Image (cartoon, rainbow, N blue to C red; front, side, top):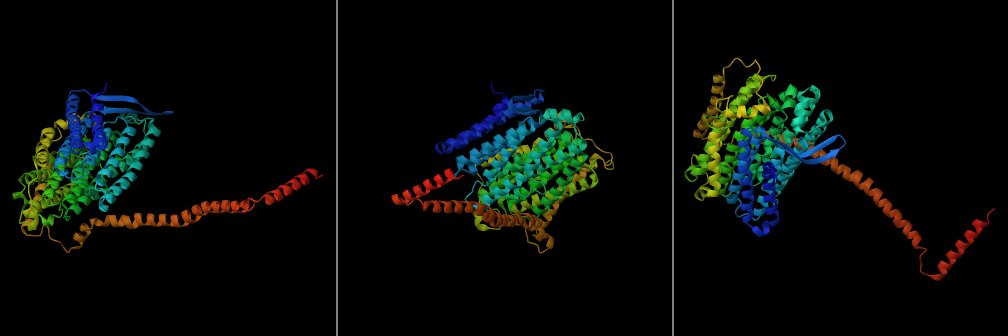
Length: 625
């Protein structure tokens, strides 16, 4: 008898098989099957959350998967408060992305293939978050990596899309290598990869602090790949080459949040290693500011949201890095709603504007796209951290956690987080003002603009409700809300230091709100002056427009040297040595064959002569003294 957890995991796998194998015959019906499977998983996920709230959890081993000497690993699943929150987050956004995809992908020739990939992606993500050990988690981890490659490069006939898919796959392999080494090291010290046993043994003093630091940093390297943190963030903006529903699914609540989940799940290791926690926090704030600065000047609506995702993931890592694990997961939860909403709303704008991505050609669209426009505005207010919308509750908890933490330079960490909040508000309201307000800047596109069909706007409305309410409902009052009490048994309460006692909680909240409002006011002033979307001759604008030249630096320092080395190895080692040995053997055999062939003339006198020589040689050999 299958358990509820197993059914939840198998449902999207069933949908993927049906759409992938029978999609050619089922046509559009394959989308209904795939969506129904994810919808059923969503409803069962909600039931599971209610069960966990009632004290009913799951930690089961279905069967022994690997048994090699002292190393054993099972196919097993864990449902506790952390995985239950992740389960609801993933299935909620995934379901509404599926519904939205009906309208967005309706005329695409690869409709069934698209839904097969989506379902396979959801299956892999569920394996990742519900696994009860690191090895099975790694299977789901690699599964979402493969599916992201397929989805980002879905329109593979476009070189830019296929290149983006390869870039995402290769960059993630770098992080995955660190993740895998971290798992091996963990087993070497603790003799297990089971979550419950790792917590018990590491928490009981079986893991030296130095080993905890090494393992935690290796796991974080994997997290940097999946969650697009510096220096492995460069794949995510290029992932915009995939269909917009893919962007919403990958960037809102699934693949990119996997790294945050891993750090939170491994909180015992980061608690043992303040050094690793500090590295996580400072990499997070650096990434948040780096990505936000690029978004300030970008004019591609999807890439602005992509860099926004990188920046918001940085905030989540600030939270888990300073020990405010609940705050980091809470922001992951609220981010899923408002970022999923904004990506889908961006897709609605593109649908209306003939797939035009340049915001400099937009303007005045609110009059023609009221549902899309107002829901997009709701998402923007939420991400800006303006109360009472969802982003305010989670972002304020992260900033407060940074301010009160033990991390070296915690006050600077908090201050940089506030600066990032101002930048976030500015670039998001810049997007809104350039897109939905002012005069149309392309009359032809504007004349043909229209609101999207209900299959696309209904998910926007549902996610907008979430962006408004889920933060306050689950997070009120701050630091004492339902989500704090719910996650405390797994993540614990943040261990506040004493260095941040200078400012009261109300002052911290006021500064956080002022940051969001300040970014909005600045964007509005620049919009009214006509400078919001204008090009600038300032050197810093050129640097930001070229994304700090990070891709170019990687190309010069890594890609080209490796390419030159590969060409040299091909020219010298492969062509001369390998091919030389292989060809030399061939020529040797050919030469021997040619010589021996001279004896095979097919003429009887020749064979008789060689028989005579052979007989004489044998007699001579036998008669020798």
